[in-house]
Length: 207
Ligand SMILES: NC(=O)c1ccc[n+]([C@@H]2O[C@H](COP(=O)([O-])OP(=O)(O)OC[C@H]3O[C@@H](n4cnc5c(N)ncnc54)[C@H](OP(=O)(O)O)[C@@H]3O)[C@@H](O)[C@H]2O)c1
Image 1 (cartoon, rainbow, N blue to C red):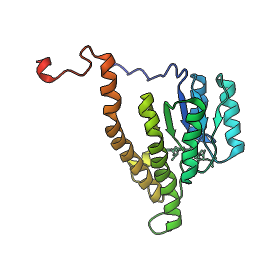
Image 2 (image 1 turned 45 degrees about the horizontal axis):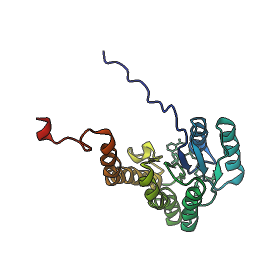
Image 3 (image 1 turned 30 degrees about the vertical axis):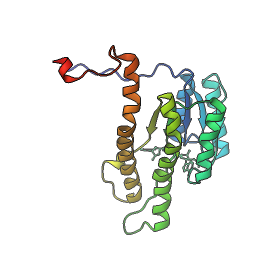
Image 4 (image 1 turned 120 degrees about the vertical axis):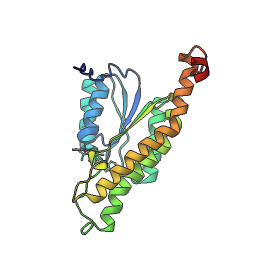
């Protein structure tokens, strides 16, 4: 019988700077509190100030430091720019970007109008693309990472949530392509320190 794989557990994020979107509710809020427990320094984005402040208070109790609040609507390009700028100005670096902000709008091909379609795609895809684009230079510097919160709706077909399903498929492909584009900046650079030759071996060398 195959041995059961041990669950992957992060034991510490001590000193890591993480920007969490959707931090005012649900998965983003819970992730923020866990990150605080693990020692991360946090920048929290959401639109609802009351809920965002509530998450920040819970993070402060769970961790050691007060999170930076960077509230605002990420569909607004200037807000996205300021969100990254304020985070990096405050902490001097960025190690983790958690893209959790997202919306679900009910509707099929017969009932979803263009306003609803645009709202879902702009929130779930365009703003994620933009914020990530702005964060990447800082994440390359820190050899950091990006977590995109997608959904099973991106891979499986569900009726009545068409635009949402499409937006999450786009996020899955965005994640794969971005990972491929950025992987060499992380892995090959890291190899300079971790591999005796300062690079991965060639097959001829292994032979
Ligand atoms: N819950 C599920 O069952 C489930 C399953 C699969 C995937 N997901 C995905 O997981 C992520 C989080 O879901 P959740 O259930 O935690 O959602 P949620 O509780 O409804 O929270 C959504 C968050 O996104 C923020 N947000 C929405 N539009 C925004 C905008 N234009 N600018 C800035 N922030 C915005 C909201 O901020 P305010 O409330 O402050 O406006 C809120 O913090 C989403 O991407 C969702 O698609 C959820």
